[in-house]
Image (cartoon, rainbow, N blue to C red):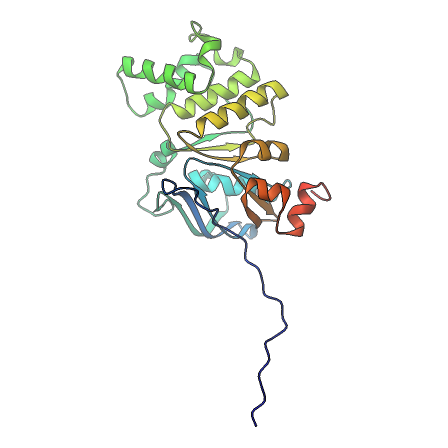
Length: 277
């Protein structure tokens, strides 16, 4: 008589959830990463990360310093290309197009995927010329068009009411929070569809940080936003979905409320409760 086969008692491995649920038929994935590895020479900074980012949503990347958050963020507009020794395996898609394909014009890509850095970095020019800069380097010469875009972008960045009538003022004379909103306006002027933000409030006071957070909420109505933050309270306040990275790996990804109240992984729970990190 044949012996009955028994099921192995080895526990099943659980996969990281990489697809936040789409909440309506109007939503779609704006950005996708598939099996991404990143190396700087022999050092591996990102290990086999896959995730999908919903259009017109706010996604936060959290994790301890050095876990790969900023490296991963910069993949979406190819800012890592400038770093010696950088190379990548896997695929990154914007609107289902492979942005690392040899046919991609990187400058055109960066018009679609704007970047706001940790520290405000206005140019030593007037407020007006800071916002007009991207339009001018595109070769646009219609001054009426440029003026309209500058004003519209400053209004979108909730800065115009504070500097109206002072557009010829040097940008470097603005406060830190105003400078950061100016940099956001500069990114908006070329009409991107995605805005990447790398610790956009870490150098700002709480009031200025609050204004940036309010602005992020408003911008979600038109743009897809991805933000790196060390401030977990900020991630909980502003984001729809949160990705927790640790040592170059994606530990958990999903709805922000669930991540912060009922995470699936012990490592996520330990990080958000301050037990390590």
